[in-house]
Length: 117
Length: 113
Image 1: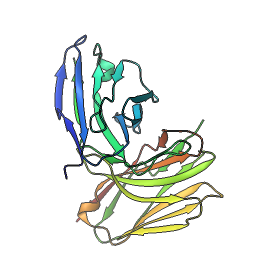
Image 2 (image 1 turned 90 degrees about the vertical axis):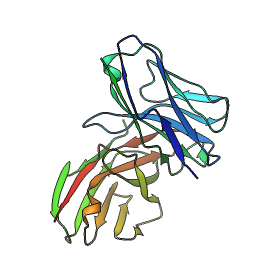
Image 3 (image 1 turned 135 degrees about the horizontal axis):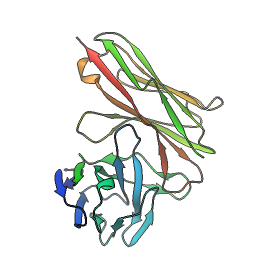
Image 4 (image 1 turned 45 degrees about the vertical axis):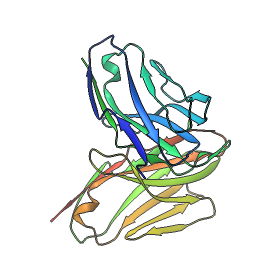
């Protein structure tokens, strides 16, 4: 049981380049989400999905796109990378989701460290 | 605006000592509060989750308390070990904020031999 797998672990981009951070989970979790973590700040929600075919914006969605074509995969796309997107990105999933209280306990991936020059 | 404030920002203790981390929140209406442990270079891992009716929950040497009236939670670590060195994150969910939780900035704990 691999849990939540993120790739790549490290990536360096030049301003304006695009790339996709991959996230896969093998726990049949219905809820998946992407966060960014910056020094001195709490985790901030970028996008989330409550099931295949359903996505929604989080707190800081600008500059990022997501899709959820399968239950297992939830890729995060950077359309035109900017230095402000230098951060550590975490994918997380949860086995259940409540429309009022949100996701249950989250299982996080190991993170992807992105540097934009 | 929903907020979660954690204190202290950082803490250094000697191995074997106890410590208590604080979490104050303004999230309303309250649904649940979770504590996560994040080792350096790793993703957060869940320690405890508490709902409105729960005052205390333990996970080994970790004990979380919740006072929903004062909107405060604490995480008590007993007989600390070097492996407890990590960031501890408090996360609070509201009962109307679908899909979104409010994360605290975390407390960085360093346990020294």
